[in-house]
Length: 171
Image 1 (cartoon, rainbow, N blue to C red):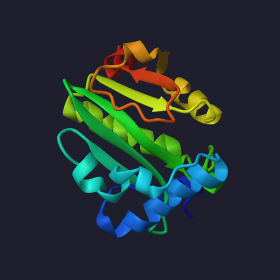
Image 2 (cartoon, rainbow, N blue to C red; image 1 turned 120 degrees about the vertical axis):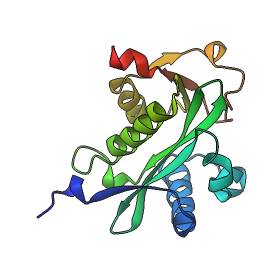
Image 3 (tube, rainbow, N blue to C red; image 1 turned 180 degrees about the vertical axis):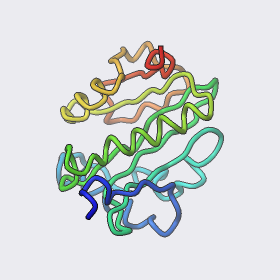
């Protein structure tokens, strides 16, 4: 019998997951973290293929029995740099049992390496404390807003920023 972590499958985005992804992300933002944001405020979520799956970017979905339980994306911002975006995991599937976040990040980092991405940046809110620990544990270090590349898209809710450099992890 498979353990719970082995039941999680990571797949590249396809339109069949569109509605479930939208619901998953907006529910986490609104209900769990009380962020007053809607799907309309996030047009990228309504055109994932066009927005993320171009250049060196991509969007992944963590699936359990074909149902999305987590997401992560990589937005190509040019100059071999990318922004990690839309990292969300359903509360029921967080932690070591399912390892959804780790599996999503692994898929993103493998992809980044294969595409020659040199730096990955992310912005998050001060409320996502568990996310801060997760990113730090996985080699991201906090940076100032002034250290972000000009092409990095700062979201209204972003107050804390991180940078990851793959070659530092491989040395």
